[in-house]
Length: 237
Image: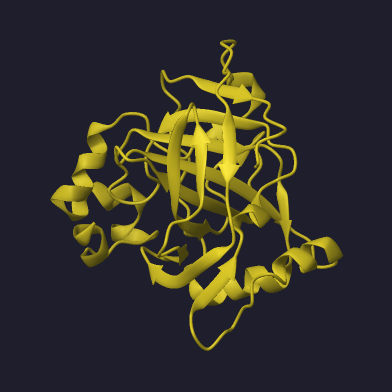
């Protein structure tokens, strides 16, 4: 982790994604894992094998601290009270961060923003939930949801339930990939919802003040891995 914070990397030029593996020995480790992220997601690449693993979110209102590192803005929960259950394993929510525009694509389409909700289990294995968003300046329901997060506070501390970011219909893609930032190591379990959520332009403008735009890694080859799709309509307790 320390190497990731001290090595200067970015998204353009000689410190951009094509050169990350050259910037440090730790970053070079990403070359050893062939299934990289993000990828282009669509129904045509989905395996015919059934995926029947229960996904249940146990999110609650808790405090998040605002932090800026690794070229993006993060909500970090110091108490780590929220978690999800997947395949009967518990994964604690450790970080929420953002990419503008989206890193994954859905049916060959990019979206203005992608949230990554990063989770970790007791074995230190990561599961990342990806949620893609479009922008709608006039959606009153979205304004009500966003009102639960007070922006531009003097002290960078927020209290909200991260479930407000989750889509109502929770069909998702599941695949094994990597981190999308250096050192891009794997395996990382990925769950990406196929229902696109909506954010207001005001909220997006706030994020743009805090982070580097175009902080997305280019799409990576799927290679020989499998991608599953599962409908999961009732997944919150």
